Image (cartoon, helix red, strand yellow):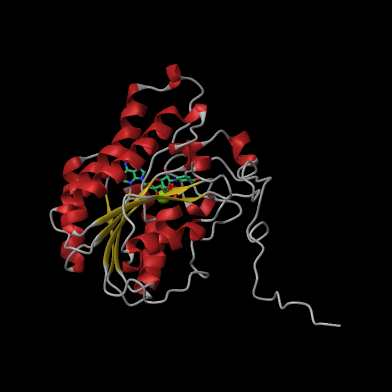
Length: 300
Ligand code: NAD
Ligand code: MG
């Protein structure tokens, strides 16, 4: 009888990480990784680098938690210097990330501040470039998501804050970064499955995410001749503090991930390889694209 195939190196994606039902506490925005139950995997122990971003200089927004934390850890493990931005109230999450980045022997710094303010966005880019001696990767990961049942429930303040965080900040950061980015630099934005398949309860958020796809395509077309590439990652449901801190109603959190074919939410670390690929020279013929990491509900 022939020996069965060796399957010891294979991982079943359906059971690799926890699936619903979940019972994680409700948080107030912007939330923290420490209240997520079960805890999320940002690659702290699981992401292995291969020198793919050696010597690169990256600014990662939303780098304290969730997908941004996973991207920041992965960038540093791949050899990049990394500055993360986050909100002042997220200092504890951020400190942990900075300690992990420092272990990689790269330059690592946290710069807290509110991206809804253009002058802060301008100074963030400048400070990041000063710290790292330049800037050649901008990963725009910060985002705001607040569910509301009806359009009447969305205040102008919420609408404004969602657009300022998700779209205006992207515009300001790209604009100021492009003033100093050399040829070969890369910008990676964060769209969503919501860009294409909007939930009725995420009217403002989903429309910002659709804007990010068009922004990515248009900017990529514009800066291609400068030798700069712009792409986006579009996650499906991912296990982060964004969701139980007002991003979804708590009854939806209980079943979070059940609507995708893999029947579970993704973990932040499962998004990180796309940020690395799109930031690195390995993807040098790819620009203007949005890549899905959706658990099986493909982008149209
Ligand atoms: P997260 O809460 O861990 O990260 C979002 C971060 O945005 C926060 O940590 C915070 O630092 C930052 N932020 C929010 N408002 C800010 C402001 N005014 N100024 C500065 N920083 C601000 O959640 P996450 O899910 O990792 O979110 C990261 C990105 O992924 C977001 O753009 C989100 O829209 C996108 N995304 C998430 C999912 C998901 O299911 N989690 C799905 C698709 C897209
Ligand atoms: Mg956070």
